[in-house]
Length: 299
Image 1: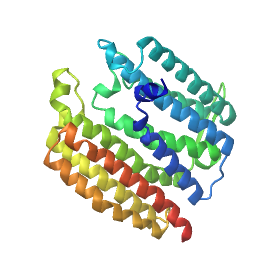
Image 2: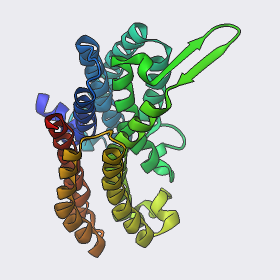
Image 3: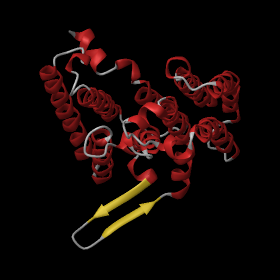
Image 4: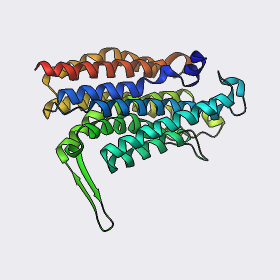
């Protein structure tokens, strides 16, 4: 039963949330920011369980007309989804209670993105903004929530009252965060972009008009490559602005295998043969990113 449940939630696809967590933890350690271990554990559980929930919702909806597609009965799948949603919500509310309104607002927005990614009259995955939202959710929201939970006043402060709303932004830390998040944002977006590029004709047949439908496959392939190059530009900029150590430039070595996968995907966009290039590049780039951040501690 456990094996079938893990298949239902596609446990093998959870690398996006795991890498986002690990890379952000490495960045926190490198920048010597405080770590609130108990809250980090609660955040990880809430994040991971909700990631499982969104995949479960996606598979549950997709199997509406073909229930045999699910590895577990639909009734049990529904109970599992509701249970995971409740657990992740309770954990999220606890985090908000311990940290404040910013976590509550951002957490609620993340929950909405996750649920409406495949649910509702016009799911996010069926519109041209799917790549943008998936990239931001995993590449920016997860890291920012982690950073804020551990060091709330370092990035921004928000106070609310019946008469006033006061928001104070710390510009330099936020710029540093933005550059740091681009690697995870771009590599995550490229997984969806590669999937939609390969599935263009099939998606159009069911009126699923993704970004690739509007810009075309040739432009999508160029964007696919450009987003990867953007990862390397962001790291170079972080080193130039002394947000990362010069030793972190070892990250650039990962461009060699990444470029090989880019070239493979450029030749043909076939789901069964070349979609895996986006997964390989995600693992290569984010693994190299994790190592390059920690190597900076030696400088």
